[in-house]
Image 1 (cartoon, rainbow, N blue to C red):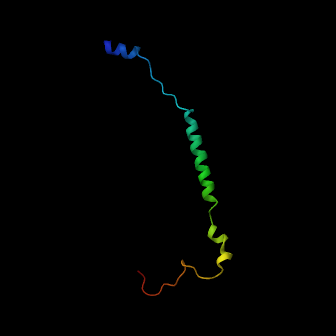
Image 2 (image 1 turned 90 degrees about the vertical axis):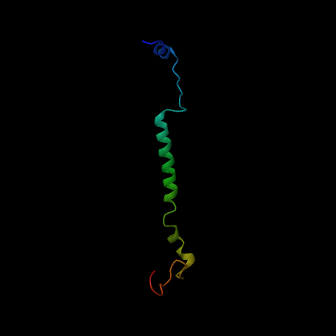
Image 3 (image 1 turned 60 degrees about the vertical axis):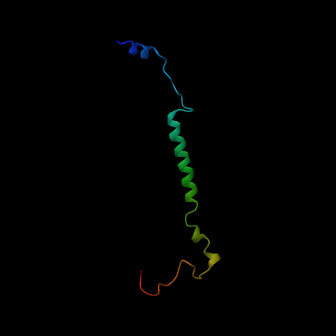
Length: 70
């Protein structure tokens, strides 16, 4: 063995511990995405819930196509 290899073998190993076990990062990501999914799910079909406020009047999104299609 060379002298450099002996020095490398004898040196201290640097350990950088994480703030929590590694599987907890996956658990936190799962909880975060579930929260985002529930928040997104609550906004589904919002336009149809408030149809009584607009009545049956045409809105800016409903119009007749007059003329040639582009």
